[in-house]
Length: 116
Image (cartoon, rainbow, N blue to C red):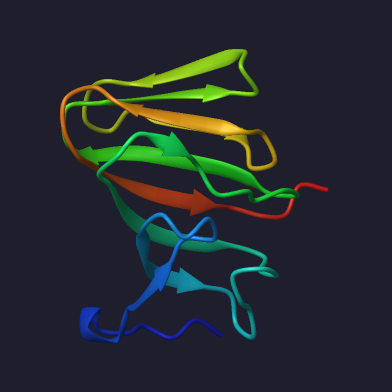
């Protein structure tokens, strides 16, 4: 069963890497950050850095505020989010380095399911 909650009830939780915070909008019942089936969140990225490890999950990030972000995965593939609503889809187990284009951004994160 899905329960609708008010914004005042959203949880603000630290990133797994400890470098920021995420507002968790929704997560499956009986879940936590280390073991969930799906999750929706919004995060502010204010510095360049390595994204948290979400091995075993596919991640989707949507740029919702700011001037852009590049995501380099395992020193290979790069996703450029340079206009609002651009989407990056990537393996949460990749080492992903985020580089801001010009100041802080906000992203909407969607993890639809475990991948492996």
